[in-house]
View (cartoon, one colour):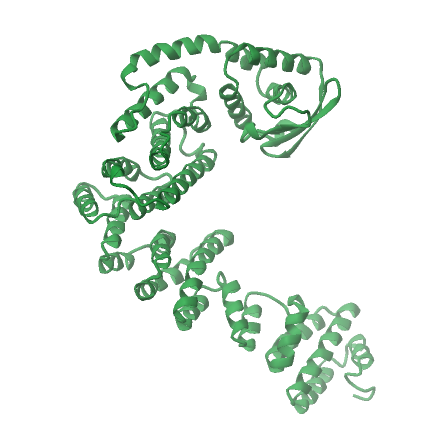
Length: 536
């Protein structure tokens, strides 16, 4: 059933998006009325869930049209009719889906009361009249505006709808409308508006309107989008030679960033990455860094906090006080490895290969310990894969093959892809074959072209693999398996011949035949393959 494949939370969140996309006016009133007519006339049919947040349907109008509903981002829904906006067919299909979980009237009645909501919104606006619009000359006016708009959003949004989706599509949308027009200021404004949404997300969690445990995975996509907004805005700012006019804004940014840093538990990794990225890219002035170090040192004296600890280490990194960071890294638990990637990435971007060599020397024990953790393979592989992207770039430019190989061998099996490629490029075929065997690859699973190349250059490297393959098939003890064993033994004979070790081959095949002389089917397959003669 359709309601078993999609969640009520996604449908209700999509309803909130529609309420934001369709402001109360006569045109939208008529649009919803037409959609209701289509829905009530049973014009919506053949609904299917293509994904947990995607539904397809057909709507019979003057001609039938096909609708695709995107519940995650309702504005990306589509219809085969000529309309390039939310049309009556999309709304009719949505009402059908909505009715599976809630009474349709609860959606339309709430929407049709929009005019009253607008009036109450205006009343709340008057209460915050001095904060209605931001003055783009100061950061403090932006922050006051953000708080004012949050109060407005909170006042006009029912408690049950104060979700992360509502915050993102309602509150953040209101902030975006008042972004400054100057490119530099606009990018900085977008960073601060994203931080404001993130901080208010924690405010909803602390007030009990969001359940941190239950809603964590539904909040995660929005946190990622906020991070993407921040990173994109930083990249834009990097294209400018930051003018002195931005200094007052940047000088007042650390307290805002510190609020996010001081939050605990949830989205820790993401918060620390954003803290580090903004400090490295925009705030890395000796005076500001030293001032923040003093503030965080006082905070560390009052309480233990992993976030404060990381913040202090990142500022030490910016001051090139690596010894302080290394002393702490030796006490890091293995699962803290991903938290070091930001530092490795920054050094790699600056092409500071000398400093990076020392860093990798201190990271190596942590990386090896990480691979011994009991975590899902994909999670481990993703982390080690990210590490080797940076490590490969370092090895390529510094020609430090020995360090790369130490990491590669120490992080197996999660570094299998990088290590096997390294050994293959170095034409160390015997070791290449061996690590394939180590992680469970059989010789018949390796590409034929690669086997041919290894056989031509180092036939002995493949001999152990074909021995194992032949033994595997013989142990199956059936005719088809014996045929496969004979096929692999033929290739093994060729490899011994290329390696000029025919006598070793003869001893081996005679011993094999003698050991299994009671297996008549095997003996027949060996004879058919001319591996032994009839008298052996």
